[in-house]
Length: 170
Image: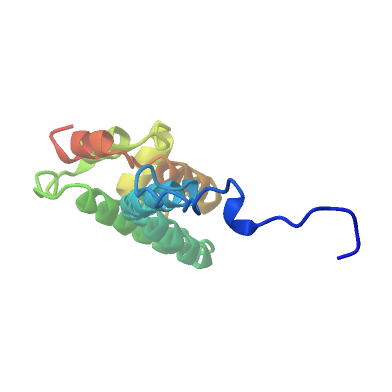
């Protein structure tokens, strides 16, 4: 070594021993684990709520599909009225698990329909619903009845509280 620096002896250097990092702690977990845990809780809850809501609205969807099928009979008012009356009866029975309202007829039947949901408040429409399915000739206008039925079906209860109220003595 021709440079003018003195040679350093490695044994005389003031070095400390190698310091290893502390072991990784298991608590608190990294943010990704928190997110995964939150998703593991939220996804089933949201799925359950969605499924329950879908189940509660299944009657409404089925009734609307059937009403769409009834539109083909709009040219024959007597048949349309008979089919609409059957649809209303089936929906009412689906909302009445105890079958307490199965024998209702006349004004009591209309009162039951009005208690279930709004949409059939027109007295002329109610009277036509009572008589048209059984008459040979009817003056019922299917074009007037269709929107009323659709409003009634769309107003069907879906919350648990409303369903309990409708299933009970209304």
